[in-house]
Image (cartoon, rainbow, N blue to C red):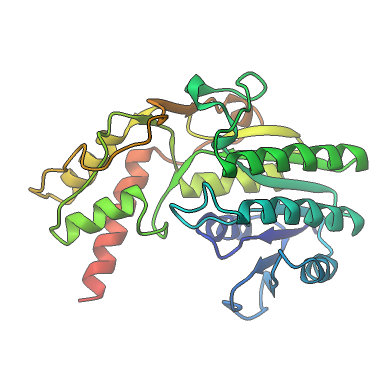
Length: 305
């Protein structure tokens, strides 16, 4: 049976990747840097390890003895990760992780990238066509990691795929991100502060992001870079107004209350046809997923009162 090593298993996206892996015919070894969340029973074996420590990383990979690596772990603190020095640490650690995985006989590696690798001035981004000229430290470190791990995989004959994630959303994402902050403000009957909201973005339900990585890891042998995206431009105001309507709120969002960077792109969308061509397909529309997310927040609020 295929054995899959998942890093970042307790993160926002990683938790959903773990849930999606459970439905696949495989053994799962999940790495987390936090306290072990559950016992090593059933289908999931947990390993607590700091992947920034080479000794712990090597020990974990040796113990896992996995055929497939799905690497989701990275520094992701909202508002800080764009310029954080930890990006350089994670770039180095990711290359080392792949080296150890290959050394242990690993066959296929799937690594999480980002849409921030692209030159955002192009707006609509296609793999191999749109230039990768990232403007942030985060994007630069991800892109450098992509190049290094790709070369390492090619040199060793290891299958390699790189998933460029767009804008995942869903229950459990950091509370200070756009949709949780809007939903919580509406539930608390507080002011909803937004940017001008005219930007078009590529929102993808986190469950679909997870299914894409599981698909790339376990259900196809296709290699290369893939946009993990919806391919559909959606205006931010439309998402915000959907939350207002679904919560039946009388609060009017204050558009323009939050300034956006001068280089904030009016359009950022990923062409997902390369990923779709491998047999993957999205599970739901953003409307269905956001409806579900808002309901989850409502039910959580009711259960806490």
